[in-house]
Image 1 (cartoon, rainbow, N blue to C red):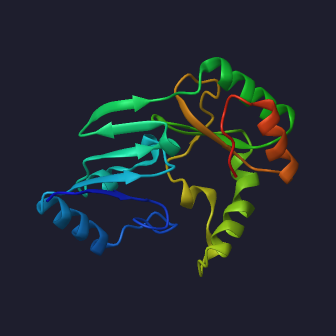
Image 2: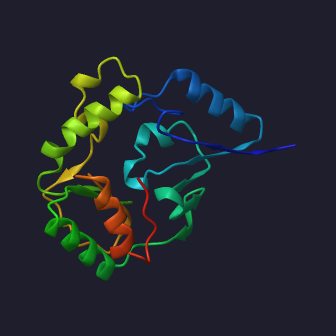
Length: 184
């Protein structure tokens, strides 16, 4: 009897430096050879699923925290943040001096000072995940294909991530955007 296997990406399929163990690729290929379907199920948008992940041999993905579903190269569902919502989000974040990046299937798009503000956050996050070299990691290590200086008012968004100055920023985002789901 064939089964459907869903695999998380960050911290499961890949480590927090985007490294894929050979054993994981072999296991996925063996599962597919045995007739099972294998999908990644991730918070990442398709723009952050690099070729070396696809090249393992996957049947598809559920990405962008569930906003995008693909099966064998065909889009099954894609729920976008509208261009109007994007304008509101970007303007609100800028007015609060919060750095952010926008996630779409076309890439990750960083705000002007995201790298500078993000580097200490990345170090702390990786330290909490137990990474030995956490103090050496940077935004560019974790997000190697991040686009700097790209268009921030976009109609192709799956989700938006931003750096909190305080937990109140998160609470305020819930009030400001009641039609969107906020997480931390």
